[in-house]
Amino acid sequence: MKIYLICPVRKCGKREKKLLYEYVHRREAAGDEVFYADRDVNQNDDTGLGIITAERKAILWADEIHVWWKADKKGKSKSEGSVFDFGMAWMAMAFMPNKKIKIANPEMVKAPPHKSYTTVLMILDAANSLREKEMKND
Image 1 (tube, one colour):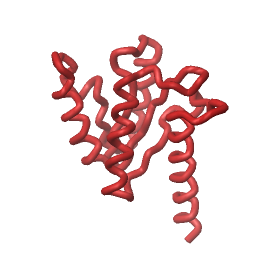
Image 2 (image 1 turned 180 degrees about the horizontal axis):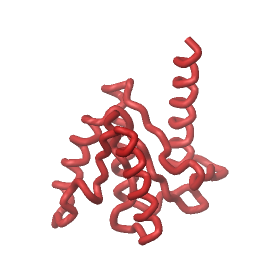
Image 3 (image 1 turned 30 degrees about the horizontal axis):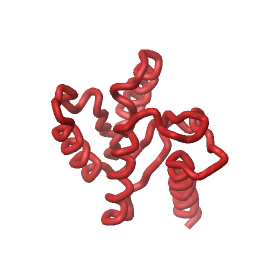
């Protein structure tokens, strides 16, 4: 399976980078191909256009979009890039409806009491889980 991982890059501490590396390593050890921006895209880009262009191509390439979501208690993401990439993934799904969006770190994602991107992400993840269960039961 080809996976594009949405995750923080610039605002990512050592502990979180270690967890992300472990997640990528586990997926690749299981035979998946993972696009991990911190490793797979040159982050030395004065404007950011090269980064988002590479990431757009990777989103289109991927079978699944896995999202490592880090938000505050109000559900607001702490990563501008993750919000942008999530929007690109959502748009890609309009043209590629079989593409799935899944939460990579569900134990760290909590629903806020109001609308937010966190809530949307949790709904998309739950819908994919239901679809997968239905497919297994058929």
